[in-house]
Image (cartoon, rainbow, N blue to C red; front, top):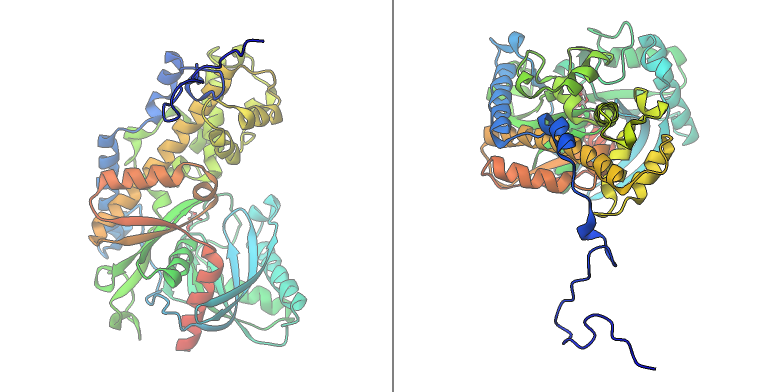
Length: 476
Ligand code: GLC
């Protein structure tokens, strides 16, 4: 029988055979996005001019936040953290850490010994009823989890130093006290705003009276991330969170932190970590030129309307919902799923942010994850075109988030004016989204001229809290 030649069989080995489209790999076969869909998404795509304007406005806001005389009118508050020493590798001992403010609440035991580090941790759920209940209930729950954890490890007779990562805006006058300015993200417990959170925790521990804890420091997750990365990499000068919320901190000259209260150590040390609370950026119309109907919808229906505008455009608490709103609009205009919308897609919060990462993780032209996600929300038998459109919406929303965060980091790098700054990053969006890192590296490089790199934090909040606690307990 004659041998039937397959395409390219007699060609020299180094000649690349282009396979006809759709034969083996579908790379070239992703269907084009219809014009009407691009139009609907147009406002979610930021131009470079817009990004530069965002950088300028953010820089203005940072300067206001740092200044004594203009702080009150500032939106980006730039709180002093009283963390002034970066780790030097000599930190030693056992430390407890609490981490409250992301999706999970964690209790950790961290052992530091030179460059060695060991960690035991446990995750506890914080039900929504607690996030929206009274402060006393919340702190009693935290103290209970802490006591269970300590007893499990049989450490109840030791006085353990503790670092408390509390990821909300705090006004601090030292390392061991911090008054809550306001709740953000999904929390809104009564009786905590304006109170010293360390005192509330200590009171809850005292009410139980079954474990001995010495709260040595309260810190933000951005600070924890910066410290944790600085322990490994001396160039780390910025901490960034891209998770449930979004925020950044950076190393500022103490003389520029005008609101820092001169104490025993403050004036002597050249640097101070500043918790920017950049999530609040945009609250006084500064971002109106890029706000879309979808952002307005998110904001109107959030627990804290009018607040944390930048955060709502970037972070994991809102990204899935932003995508859902765009998809719903496309269905309503008959541009997706044949105009038919399953009830799940009409419900708020039913399109999770993790779906965005999963869908964008499909190789180009393949829609395995996309179909699985859509099936989960009750949409079956979808065409490749529908999948490609859904993926397009995800990529537009996540790209905008990456670009906004990039504009933020570029503004901070310019303000610092230093080369070779490492940005320590933590948070589920950065960690799990397949393109966030690359998108940010590219965009930050375009928006400013300093050399920098982005480093994923291994365990921002835990190790960072232990390091801050270690330095604080040494001072004592
Ligand atoms: C919110 C909090 C901020 C925190 C961020 C990331 O923006 O206000 O303190 O750092 O979320 O968790």
